[in-house]
Structure formats: structure tokens, C-alpha cells
Length: 100
Length: 168
Image (cartoon, rainbow over all chains, first blue to last red; front, side, top):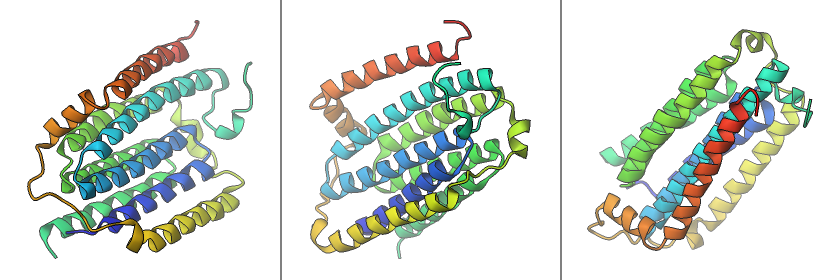
């Protein structure tokens, strides 16, 4: 049986990679995908603890997080499409206007 | 080392490896495919912890739904320009150091809390049927959050339509 803290190490690794992706990349689509990676890392923790304590509350919260990720992806990609249509670029550095 | 452990370390290595590839690739489509690999490996980890319902939700909703949306948007926007641009921003070194500092803090917290925070595992001998237990929790104690989540999805759907429209 794999100990619970190994799940936490896996989650920590994925979380860190996601944070590095959000902070260092310029492409907004990659940034959005890194955010999905961070949310996914949290889900691993929830499932590991849910199994450790023998009840499913953690898994229910993981389902809510997946719902949030879907909502965030839909709105975020809509914003990216609108942005690309107006500025012809995908770089986060260029996103410096509220209205044009 | 049993089959369970071998599978866990396999899935963990797969997830971390393809996550690293995802944040370093220049081509966004390659990044999306590596993210799909990471999500599938994570689904395997869920299955190893007997979260069957979450496993299938992850595969259908994340990989089948959200990632298809990503790939669609990637194909709607022009890739050729961004392939020639520099992919990392100017503050990348500071940002990398800060991210690693955050990771070090979390590492220390988990390391310190390992003995006191995690009690002995209390896994029942026979777990309840997973989908049934999740449904009981979701439609019982978590009824209100469930309804709020459905309103959130409705708002997100309207928001996505408004954002993607040419003229509102």
C-alpha cells in the first residue's frame, strides 16, 4: 500500500510545475492549461485523504473542483477568443487594456 | 512491492514527466496533448485510491470535454505567429525562484506534519460502493453546493457565449 504522503509529494510536484507554467509562460492558452494542472493537483490530495479517512466527502469536493475547472475553461477560452479577434496575439504581456 | 505500488509510481512518473513537457513545449497543441496525458495518469491514480466515479468523471469531463474545448480554441486562433515568438517572459528567473520557494515551504510543511498530521489510516475493510456513496453525499448533505454549482455552470455557459460572440 502506498503511504498517503507519497500522494502529497505527487500533488506538490504537479502544483509546482503548474505555478511555474503560470508565472513564466507568455502564451495565455498555456497559462490556462497550467491552471487546470494546479486544480488537478488539488484533486489528488482530496482523493488521497478521502480514502485515508474512509468517507467520500473529499471526492464530492473534487467533483465540485472539476465543475469549477469546466466553468473556468469555458469563460477563459471565450475571453481568449475575443482577445485574439481584437489584438491578433496570444501573449499575456499584450493584455494591458480593459477596453479598446 | 505490490502491483498497486508499481502502478502508482508509474502513473506518478507519467503525470510529472508530461506536466514538465507541457509547460516547456513551444507548440500549444503539443502542450495540450501532454496535458491530456497528465490528466489520464491522474485518473489512474484516482482509480488506485478506489475513487471509481471520480476516475470516470475525470476521463469523460476533463479529457473528453475540457481538453476538446482547448484544442478547438487552439485551432481557431492563429498558431503560426506564436511559434516564432519567444515563449518565456522577462521575469521568468524571479518567477521560477519564487515558485521553487513556495514548493520548498510546502515540502517542509508536509515533512514536519508527516508524523503528527496523518493519523493511522482508518480504511474500512469493505468500502461502500463508490458511485452509490458519492451520490448519497452529493444529493444528501451536499445538495445546496450541488445546486450552486449548477447555477455556476449556467452562468459560465452564458458568459462563454457572450464572450465568444462578435457583437453583443
